[in-house]
Image (tube, rainbow, N blue to C red; front, side):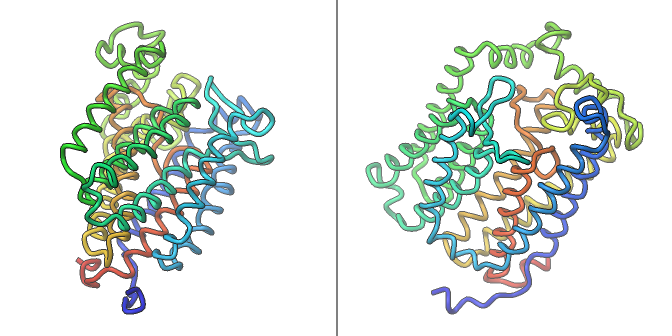
Length: 375
């Protein structure tokens, strides 16, 4: 089958949008990280340098390699890759190998840098589901052959994520998995059942963890305890609101001076809003919209089911993760702890995202209609 597929130019519009996001993120980190870097390391650009080397530079090397590999090759490695990911997720709990921060066990210590296996899980799980659902073909609509195996692997991932705990990433993986499952042809009643069960599980997790209940309380009552549980969202809204139309100017944020928690992570969108204003965040949102349009167009014109499902999964991952982060910083949904893709500080997240982008761009080389990428 694949021997008859001819390649052509990749989607240069998508490539440009991704590179623009990476550059945007590097600039944002360089500005937002100065105070916290100075406080922790005694020099202003530690985080920027780390992101540039272990995030952007390393990620672009992997991107350059991956975007040249025919995407269907990955079908041969999806199961071993998923097993490796599960092993890495387990390693975070082993003393001396894994380590935690803020009560969460999510990282593996690799000496000069750390790695977050949950980021890799986003990609390997998408690839695994795409390959598995393609093989299932029509039986994906079956209860015993489609629904039961699907929910089994979802539950296994959920247990590993809950133990860390990383409910935000779990929610994102579950959402993207449901989208892939739906596009593959699953029955709507199965999708509906999974949504109901997922919401019930989420409510149970919120109820048993005080900090999750606090986030929900602040979302429902934004004015409650502004110096306590409502501090982060109130400072984020203050930062975005003070940016106005044109912003205070790059480098002139006030909230990044140890007022706003996680200024280079979950809250970096608020710093962007403060420094670059409505114009700056509009440019950022437009870049994600371009990514969404081009990514889903690649899925439509993909030459096979595997390519379609991978394109849908990767694009949905980037778009929904961005939407969740932005919406949380605007107080439209509860805070989730999910970073802004390509923008927030985090080497492992950026490297894995660029690998996924490379695979998506490779799929674009084999779309059925070359002109689809020129419109």
